[in-house]
Length: 125
Image (cartoon, rainbow, N blue to C red; front, side, top):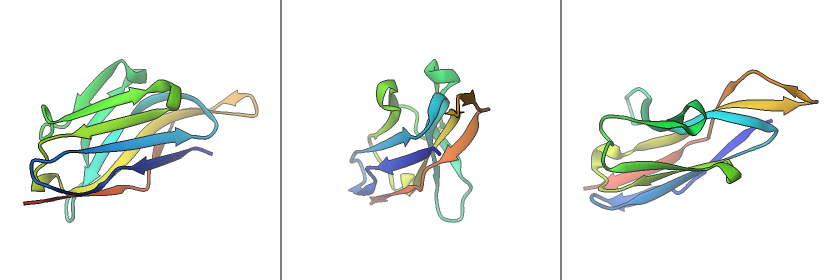
């Protein structure tokens, strides 16, 4: 079984910075995509930043471009989200997501989407 564990959320003033981490563990064969989404109260979950196609490229949500940076440590199956110049509008629960192929009993499974438990980011004005 695969788990995604997030850390690094918290309360910060506008203009400040936070760094989120998400570590994947379990019977992992490969990670095809891995990244971050967020959901604010009363709003739909939206893309923040993601590594696509086995880490060969990145995709950012329009509202965070130039302020947020996603990074990846393949050896640790971990992604990071460096968030700078934070705004109150960035307040949300941030979720890690990964599309992972597992190896179970010597058999490689199809890719399956996993979500972390979420970490709260609150930006005060």
